[in-house]
Image 1 (cartoon, rainbow, N blue to C red):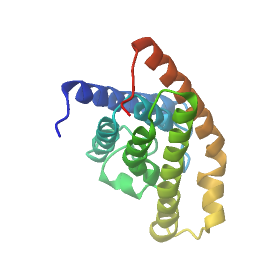
Image 2 (image 1 turned 120 degrees about the horizontal axis):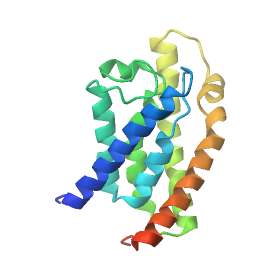
Image 3 (image 1 turned 30 degrees about the vertical axis):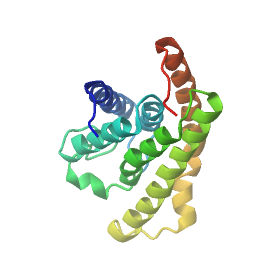
Image 4 (image 1 turned 180 degrees about the horizontal axis):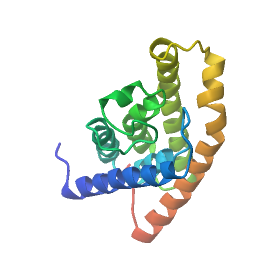
Length: 186
């Protein structure tokens, strides 16, 4: 299978959007373990509008840009290979898979289909991100945190915001698909 020029361009557009919004949002907030960001919104929107392959490549490109040293991540060190030791990196690591699954689940631009597929993506990045956070906090940073504490740090303060981001992504996807007359292949 080959990837079309259109898919490459759209994937690059969402990679650039992810980088730009991450940088803009991080300027306005203090440094925290798990920062508030618009990254889930962009991933959810990309997965709704792009093919599974294109969203996977877009999120992978974002990760690679940060890991090679470009300062596109939310918390210090903002980029470079050492970022894999940041507790929140597991959420970013999950974005390519979460976006791919979400995009695969979308059969039509209906609110219900978009919402259910987005909820699946959210579950995936929490299922990868929270255990990753647990491992980094306990075994790399030497903190003693249990699963309940990880949920208090990385899940409870953010799940409502992620559901709101999903609602915004669904609305934006519906508007973009209507205005551009986009269709999903079944």
